[in-house]
Image 1 (tube, helix red, strand yellow):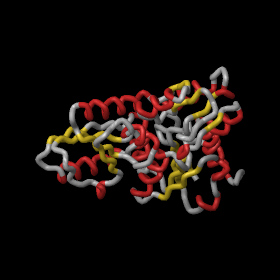
Image 2 (tube, rainbow, N blue to C red):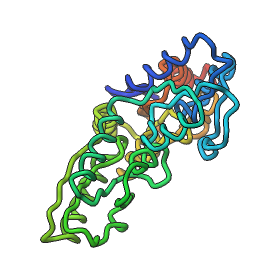
Image 3 (cartoon, rainbow, N blue to C red):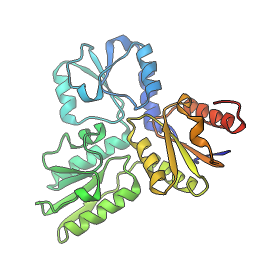
Image 4 (cartoon, rainbow, N blue to C red):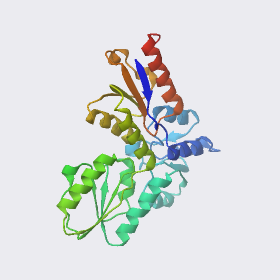
Length: 284
């Protein structure tokens, strides 16, 4: 069995910067991470070992006993930041600059009187942050969810990890459903997401199956898996090398390897080495 790596994969600069900042905090015992810093259990385990408290993603609004809170790379709304400051919390902001740019764009359009449409997964922490400062908005995850909105002026942006192919379909559906209105489209997919999607598209031309490494809660990791499946290529999503099931690979001669933007380099290498051992029958 031959193993081919995607040309672009793994942790993006925004996640790396957030981890580096948190790992060097002088008083980790006085700090709580406001949700999951990254959707990666290995990283979260290391943070716990350092003494940091982590608030559950769905219950992070619950009062935290720690005086300092880390805003994750996914970001939060300005309203939420002000609410936390009002409770006397100190904030350590690791919001990815690319996510912050989308926040500013959404607020700018809203201030100019546009009804803001966010293409993304409703309920995702990044999307919650994007719409948290808006009073008039809609979140659309699929073309089927697009409708004709009451507003005459629409501004369409997207979650940074939106698959480019999906964004094109949603944009086209919005144009048709809202024909005759003023519509501003702005592609706010981040470059790391676009590069990883493109690399997988190229890899799928050469492989019979794909291994995707990343957290189960990672949106961009799931999208890489979905991309493979949409092209008729079987995909196996794992968090670590130990998750690999040798029997799954029977019958495949060429397997591809990629990883989401929350995946550590050492995790990717461990999976790669295990796959190489599988092909020689040394591991499994």
